[in-house]
Image 1 (cartoon, one colour):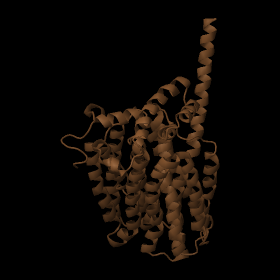
Image 2 (cartoon, helix red, strand yellow):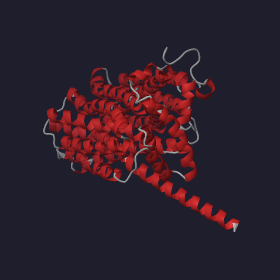
Image 3 (cartoon, one colour):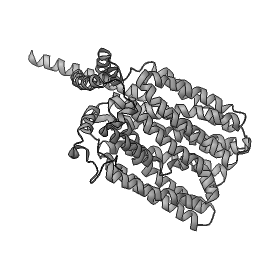
Image 4 (cartoon, helix red, strand yellow):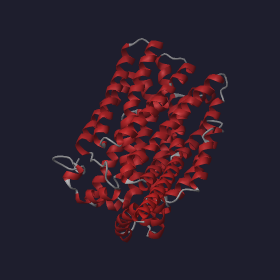
Length: 485
């Protein structure tokens, strides 16, 4: 009889575990559609630009404006998105983002000229930036501690999958309808489909239990945890969440005034540094202008569109590897290896662009090097960046911290996107990539000195360790502090 009861209990636990696993998969699949839209909308401009230049009469200046308007909007979308998600909830604001994605996509698809295109690219950027700030936090708050790396970086996988999808769509439409100047409008318009799917899917997704706890809705928070955890785990995690949430709730919502607290300021500055490190590699010069780079290296337009698919394929494959590594390797060594790898690839792109004669041969060499660069970038730097930004901030300032650091990330992205066509025209492609490689050395120094290790710790454990500032737990810098730096 005792055996039967034990078997029944084990069977019930297994059933509950299967049910929670199914719920987590649904939450991940739906919410990361925001990442797919992020990737598609940032990647589609890569192949659309050659047709837009002819159709809209773009110059290097207006090319930079059209490309970077989305990035400028993304900076403010990330900043506002973090605060709004703290106030109104992660789920509700992700649904609002889906609507903004739809409006922005329709606007850019039917824009008759640059004067209309740029404002709607800004609107689309608001949604992209909002997604970059909200989706990783939502996933981090939904995931168990031992699987947070894999769940949060699924969003990065969807971002690069969106970029690959954009590259494939660009190549197919650009090659089949190469004589049709307006084909770029169809390239942009297809993003309406995942925007609609995101809004509909979020109707069936629960709110973040940690956000519910942060506003004092403890019964609702516990109900959500019971749907996405086994009963025993849900109870244990709820007790941790309730304790910290009560402290933060009683102290009211976080604001920039909280950065006057040394340990919170230190976390914020680390987040800013991580965000800058991800962008100063110049990755988005390749993701936005890859087709143009390959054209300058010796490929024709149609061939460059097709060859650029390799950049998207390696980004997806490398992200799979990155997700696998995050479950086995610390954040610090991954970021360090990624930064060193990108520096070498960037220096070689600059070198071979300088010494090889223009032609298809140089084009294939540059393509091989951009693929190598993206293997390190998307396999190590980008997954670690978005994961760490989603997990290092305490609950009280999580939305504010994620939004503010994502704002910095997008502003650096904007600077790269806007200046790249102007730099390549002014100083040449070789000098531009040498510049990115040089800045990358500073990023390596930052990672070595200041980055903490967060792997295998719950969000609540991390908050307590940052609060205590325990050197053995956080591996802080030697001989100084981030604030002093």
